[in-house]
Amino acid sequence: MNHHPDRHSGLHPDRLPFLPPLAAALIRLHYRSCKFTIIGREHEEFAYGSHDPVLLTCWHFAFPTVIYRYRDHGALVMVSRSRDGEWAARVVTRMGFRCFRGSPGKGGSTALKQLISHIQAARGGGFIADGSQGPPRIAQKGILLLARYSRAPLIPVSMAAHPCWRVHSWDRTVLPKPFSSIVMALGPPLWVPRDVSAEDLETARCELEASLNRLTDQAEEAVRKTGRSKGH
Image (cartoon, rainbow, N blue to C red):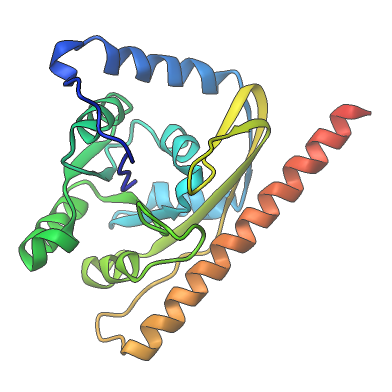
């Protein structure tokens, strides 16, 4: 996931090298207490079984759970070059991901080519559809361009959890509580042709956005039903 923390810590991870592996271990322990239900499992199996690169994409609010679910497969995630980004990179590396540091938007075509090369070497990756700054649940064109030039299909994925915490941030990040029920919802792959027109690219962007919002609604409805059944 292309995660860019909002604040900049003054403490470098080299000062406390035990914290990233400890954080990764606690994340694993926390999520193991939760029960996962998968909607659209055939799309998840397609991503796992593909011999070509595949790009999973989600809304920013879902990234902690998506990081856990798709751990230990060597997928690529994008992390900023900030000091907070260094903390995040060390944690997600411990979760079994590869990290691309920086943004192709800031590095131009050279950075984009490097990112695509890393995606192909890692056989895919995970990226956030609404970016690092939002607005929330509005798909940005960057993920479509990445799919276009890497020739990798986009697999939309969203989630919901009950009970959960909601972070007071622009994206309202979802953090499942211990022993919660988590529903992951995946949609069919979306391919972006190399010769796509500007008009068709916008159509694909709207399609991705609608798919992610539909999957979010499906996951929230399913987890509400789970909560009601437990109440009985």
